[in-house]
Image 1: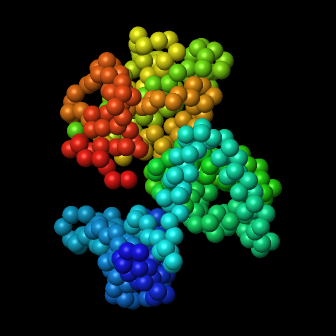
Image 2 (image 1 turned 90 degrees about the horizontal axis):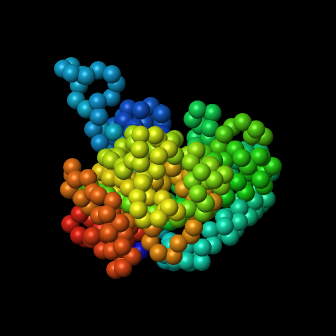
Length: 219
Length: 151
């Protein structure tokens, strides 16, 4: 285990920092100190202190931007802004290495040309996720189940989009296979919930998950 | 340096057959996306129509895509992070599965427009010797300085 991985996770042991990290992550864009302080109802200096702690260990990235519409003389100096860093932090005790195994498995699927079987397996896994969900979770619909799985759903233009790809590292190595399996998993999830699975589509964007959902027909 | 990429696909049926109709219907929207994508530099066109495919002497069943991009990231985002992906996902409906590499990349000086012969020679090099700084793939990607990219 790399000690800086532990340092990064250790910084999140402070509940306020955890809230700040979550707030910045959920915005999906750059956030200024004032905005974060107001959202959490804390002093600006306190927010700045904790945001900088999160940036020091690499959980957030920083930049300087002019906030607001004013430009030119009198608009003030640029403000420090924060966004979630893209790097993954994995902490497993005792050490486990599922990513190396996932990459080897993906290569086997490639060699066998077994993409369709892989999609069927993913679909069944999605159905199972829906089946074992508690009634309360099912009540929240597909968005709630996806949120639980770390997809970070949000709404945009009548669609549910997913800010985070839980399979990012394998998707960067085997994009077609992993994105196709992810779509099948989402369709299985919908089928398990009794929602028409056509509402899930491959709809990738840089930096996000490859699947989005139309809100029409959603029960 | 700019990144050149060439990929070939062996058609399961002629382009004007019903089996390829969906693929042909997707040519115009996909080209409309690639041609305005961030980092797009150039692509070899088969003619003035958006549905024209690259003309060549390598066999009637071979479809060729040949383009130049500013970086690995911009090419990646077009191939895998745009509406090109759902079309790519359907490739088995239209093209033969092949056991040899069907896509190749290499670095070129900015402003250089590579010839189709050069591109096909890079693909042959990749097939003969495996990935190297002169002919490589996304999975085994080489930087302009010849270093293998960390993955």
